[in-house]
Length: 247
Image (cartoon, rainbow, N blue to C red; front, top):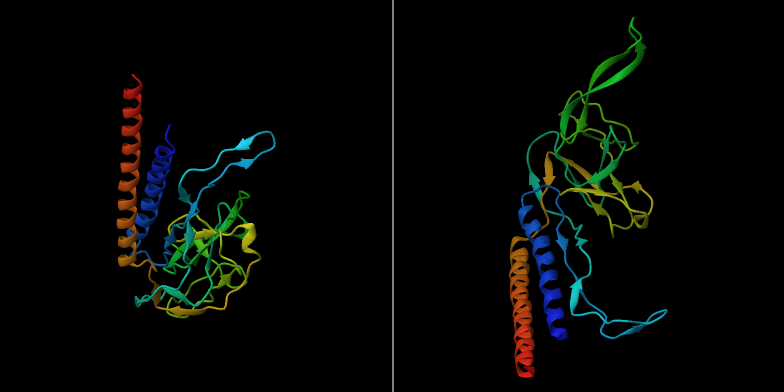
């Protein structure tokens, strides 16, 4: 079949992926701490390559190379809430899920005072551990905020500045996005170190997605998708004409 058919089909499918990314950016314009994703494209192989036993066929068209995250600073949103924090500069807040032990990182500093039951180290007359209730800073979704030394942050007076940790990595490339605003580091991000960002209370960091830019990218993707489908349609018509001539 004509090579242009495959080029158009691949192009249409990749533009759909691009639309999904930019649509997600638009949906999170008002999500605090959200970092916009980008969609760089790359050409597929344009010539055959020699394999171990046979030639490897060339690629067709272009594909979405990867989805990269723009970690640039978002604007400041003054909320006035004493448990809202933002980082001016580089770094992340650390969140720990006590049920799994998983530690993730976020730029969303909308925190809350949450109840936590923990053992006192003593037992009752039935041999059951005695629990005490403490209040710690959390993201209100079951995860607790880490202090700079990696412990939980007990909250008594929410008006005072709490010892919230700021953590950082030298390389953000490839960090795994596991929710709209939470990230999990991978091996190539390097070791964890103390962040240099400044902690600001009573503010949150707005999304760094730009509405005008995202709409422009959506329109580009829609137009490219339509052109790719036209290519598929034209290729199919050419094949139909050739088959009719043979008959």
